[in-house]
Amino acid sequence: MQYIGGMPIPGGAAALDRRLLRDDVYRRLRDAIIDGTFAPGEQVKDLDLASWLGVSRTPVREALLRLADSGLVVALPGRSTTVSTLDARTLRDARDVVAAMHELAVREAVGALTDTDLDAMQEANDRFRAAVVAGDAEAAVRADDDLHGVLVTVSGNRSLVAVLEQFTPVLRRAERLRFASLGGRSSIARHEELIRLCAAGDTEGAAAVAFDTFHSLTTAEPARTEE
Image 1 (tube, rainbow, N blue to C red):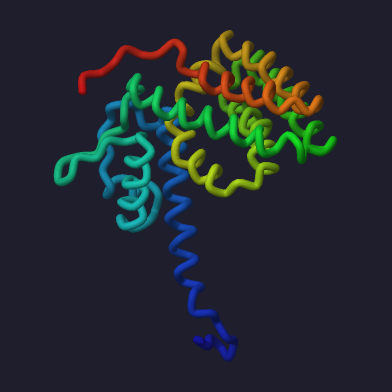
Image 2: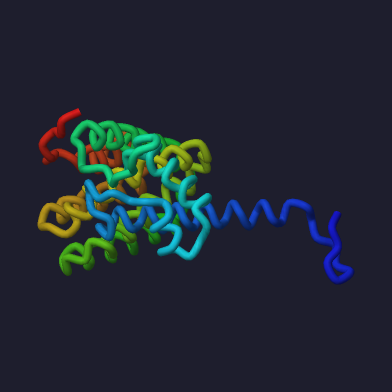
């Protein structure tokens, strides 16, 4: 036990701060890639990123490793790190995993949903509809997250959450492209059907709709890049 000014300080406090810093740097870099601040194919350097974020190079390097695991950057040891392109294979792989996880979340959540949960889903879809009609992709993504997040939270499956945190960011750019266009309106009807089936306790039907909602994200895929 350490003491500062006579006050006992747990030994693990500094480690927690470092972990929070790492997570914050990761989220900020992830979001900058998703929103297009860093374009596909753009080279990113840890020193420049550290200066931009006002942190040391260590958390930036750790964040880039996590982003590489998620498929958002391509890291070539000793050479360079670049923002990944919307590669068709990468999108398909992430789509399949994310769709399966949301299907599982529905299966585990439907029987435990309350009226409050269903109201929260409906309110999120109302916001989603308004955002899509307005062409506000950022607000649409947030509302979509809130709607499906109800089911993920109620499922109580922490492993499922960890998988989604790793692979959902890969789909974000595809989601933004859809939600900023008229194609996003098809998701409004899917959401309504999902909510209706959840309210009716139709686990199989709701699970199928959840899977289709995410599996349809990359129906119109970009051309395959050279591997």
